[in-house]
Each structure stands twice: as structure tokens, then as C-alpha cells.
Image 1 (spheres, one colour):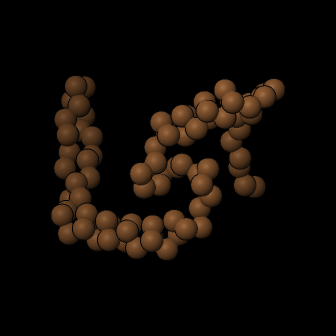
Image 2 (cartoon, helix red, strand yellow):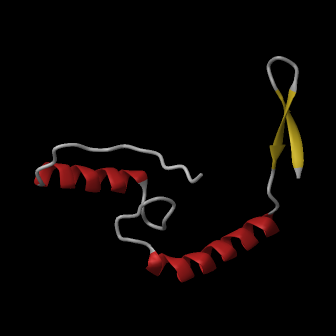
Length: 81
């Protein structure tokens, strides 16, 4: 379902509202896919995984940096051409 929320300038912003049945189907598919693929992920992967968060990733990164000699840290985004 789509409803339109008024903005301060008088325009309206579309907002999609998911039906309860859709939420149930999405959750069921999520659980099935997690059961299939969770075992294939590396233990160092934290993105969008059950019982893991960005805070867990930062805690692990802090633990590694503070307990091992680290000369540099690389931050990068990869793009497939």
C-alpha cells in the first residue's frame, strides 16, 4: 500500500507500507536463506548477519589492532566493471 505524507513545502512524499502477510513471507524467506547460506560465510563477515552488528565488527577490529603489530589499515570500496 502506498500513502502520501505531506512535506513542509506543500508537496507530498510517497511512503510504502508493507502488509502483514508480506512481512510474514519476507521473514520466512529470510530464515530459509539464512539456514542455507550462513554456514558458507566466513567468521570475519559481519554485514547483515544474524546476531552480528557493525559494533561487533568494530570490537573485533579494535582487538586485532591493539594485540598485533599493524603498520596500516586500508579502507576501500570495490566495484565490478
